[in-house]
Length: 133
Picture (cartoon, rainbow, N blue to C red):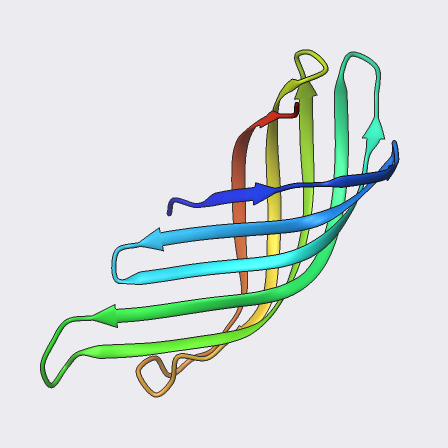
């Protein structure tokens, strides 16, 4: 799976940030986009390493379009989303860093009757590049 994630944080305190998180996952016949507001707590270690746990709440939209004709599937759903994650960041300098994030998404995606089961969780492992002006 391929996913893009964007966030733009506001820092009311050096250890706390809040802001939106948007994740886009285009996967052939299946497309998913989610947006949530999240709060992050930055645990800063020596040597430019940060550990950042976070949680948020938002919405996820999924769309499944597969085939044409009698056996085709055309279903979509919009539901709530609770992203919970942990990032490990390494800052090469003040404006540039690398990160790895493990994120668990809690949601209630329902594409029935095309798919008989509901989807309640998803897990994403993301690798990123961070830049700030």
